[in-house]
Image (cartoon, rainbow, N blue to C red):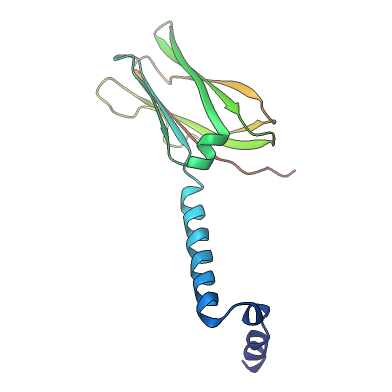
Amino acid sequence: MKLWINLYSNWPMRMIFSEKRRGLFILGLFLWVFTVGCVGSAGTTVTLDTLSGQKGIEKNDFLFGRRIEVIDVIYRDVGGIMEAQITFKNRSKASTFIELKGKWFDQAGYEISDPKELWREVIFSGKEEKTIMLVAPNKEAVKVQIMTRRGSPVGP
């Protein structure tokens, strides 16, 4: 306990900031970490409804939404099974890692995709454009919701 008190009393922030500014700095740092941590996993959600022909793009993370842009969303019917195609563009010069997952719904709005489906990892090089295809699980699917979130570099 005595060692902790000695370390705290010699802490460099004590010499740089007054007590009031130190408290505001620590509070600001905490709020920033909390905000980045909560928003970091949410990404862009693209909704495609074949019955109404409506397409919707919802950006839940401002920074992620600016880095990865949705260029195009189209669909087609192949033998009664719906295929969705979404084109993304990395607007950054740096490599970007994202994860995506599709949720399929029937005409009544019930989810018919496998809830155990895993997130797919996609790696974009700087300024790269990629097209991703998703195929409906069966003929009842009329609506798809494609969710993205920030990924992390995968090590060997």
